Length: 296
Image (tube, rainbow, N blue to C red; front, side, top):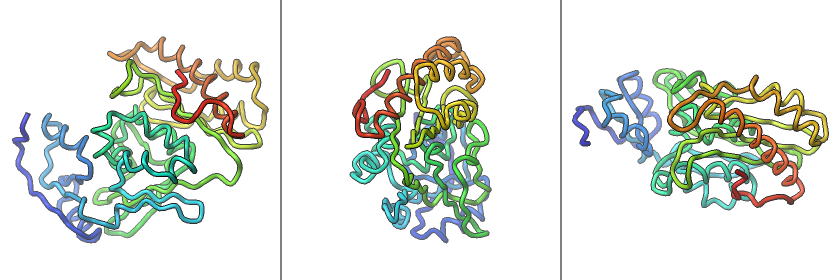
């Protein structure tokens, strides 16, 4: 289907010019980075922007740097860039593992992490890693720069914490100071491009600290605070895992749709918890399944 909706098209080269255009068009403007979401929505007549602002010429948004324990991911960094990065794979392997599950090769070649989190869809595969690493999202607007914690980013289906006329400049992941391991377990219907039926990210830190986050089983990706409260401070045992499984219905609110029933999602989430948390703990010492190996 061709795009029949008319709009103004801009290709600024500086962030300040992007901000100026956003201030002029306000809610009627849309930013174009990868375009894997926006172009489809315009074609399907779900979006009717008055202005499309292509930010691909803003070079400062392309940075992918690891400085003093912090990974800086610019707004134009694609998922393929992240997968191909030795720094991401070696320092943030659980994040790298989750990125590899996103969509297809063709989509990953164009889609950006910044665009992905701005879409704020419930099945966001990057969400659990963002939440468990407690990443920061740096945004800029006419009032200047502000930093938003990933824990405060997701407000509802397709709703995020950006204000009108703001853009995401970078996402910052901080490397935990303690030894740690992680896992991202994704249930899909088949290999290849598919949205998650259930997604679970787990970051296990030395000293029996656990951070868990789900996606695709509620209105937003979110941390599993009740599970964390039960698990934290305790060595992992089979009995503790069984106790944790009982809390899952209190943490997630899956629906029945074309991809899975509510009951199936609840059941498999328990299996995913057991496999994922065991893998995360084993990986702290370099054991367990290799990162990128499917756990379900």
